[in-house]
Amino acid sequence: MQRLGNVSGIDVEDKHMGRAKDLKTIHNRAEIPSFTSEEEEHLFWSTHELSDDLWDQAEPLGPDELPSPRSTTRPVVIQIDEATLKRVKDLARRRHTEYQDLLSELVTSHLAEEEQRTG
Image 1 (cartoon, rainbow, N blue to C red):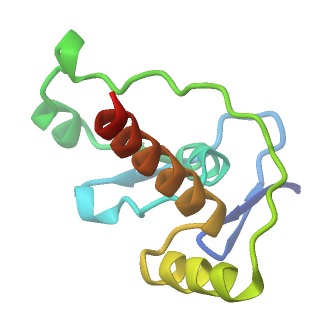
Image 2 (cartoon, helix red, strand yellow):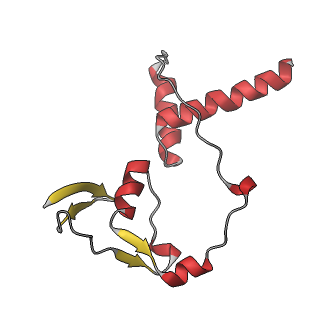
Image 3 (cartoon, rainbow, N blue to C red):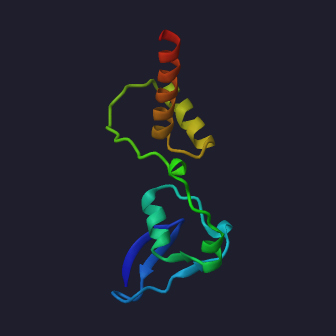
């Protein structure tokens, strides 16, 4: 069996090796988990499909409803004192997000505030 990965704590394996996989059909939106990464989402949808009824309930998105493309990111190194880093990690945990993502969000929002304030 080829191991495809781990989805929400469940190992996913391809038991058919080259044949079309038996996909689990999703009948209700509540059956779709929240994903923590695109890889996790990809692994889930490689083993699941939406039912025809669920597809029929879907409404097409208008051009203004599609999410914006992601901007490219670049890793940077910053130095933060231990107490501040602990506060950031605690807040990120409460928000169920990665602390690096929270730091990026905080920098972006504070930068926008400063730009508005200083013109």
